[in-house]
Image (tube, rainbow, N blue to C red):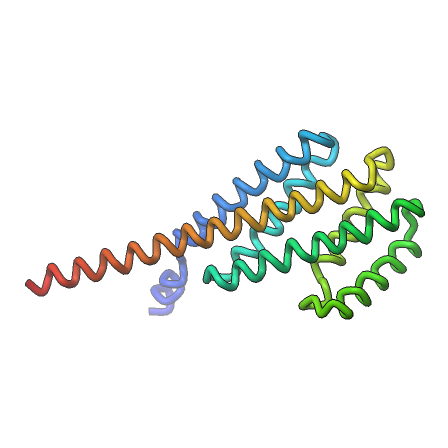
Length: 183
């Protein structure tokens, strides 16, 4: 009986949905970045996949839209602060920590949920990418990270919507099937 309970927890549809989401986010994230900065194309895939998976965790469309919006907002704030930082300074650990501190204060003042967790991630990623690729212009670096996150969030929201449509169709089919069996 315990094995049957374990097997009942398996939802192949959910696993397949996540695989398709990761595939789409990986492809589009690396494609977008690769068109402008081929060297950081794999980073584009990472950020797009991360955004898509975070958004996909919410099972309903309303929460997914909210999570996607927070993801995009946080990425915008982090990319903007990183861009401003890189206009005046080169990468350094103390500089990164000061930028994170300022970003956190700004997110608190703006009442960004989770104090801009996504903003912090994006800020750090942009600064670290700048350290690895110093010839990548800061505005392009920030814009690429923002684009990757937005694409990933959009794919996650789209896949949640697809799952929602399939659930509604399944319920409709079950209703029709039950009605047919009663006759």
